[in-house]
Length: 104
Figure (cartoon, rainbow, N blue to C red):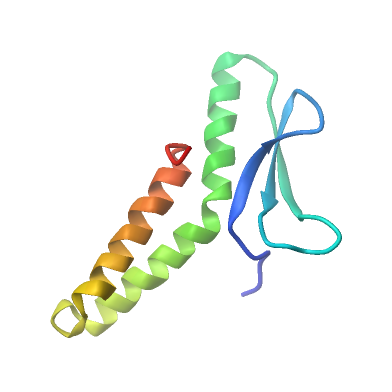
């Protein structure tokens, strides 16, 4: 599977009624825009769309955390080091916080 390298971030769009998700990876000459999330309908819609943007932006970290958790599961808790388990757990918590917009 191929996708634009993460991490991704939410930015205010070029216009007031949009949020943009960009890759933080350095693609010359500029960062890559992943997608645009429309806002500007009403406050309830905007809150939901901001949440959607946060969830999309967290996708690379969520996938990485799931890969780490899967590795712990495959090896089994008895065969994993405490550091492997802690790293997977920390990655999971960080990705979930980003998806929920709590990483700011």
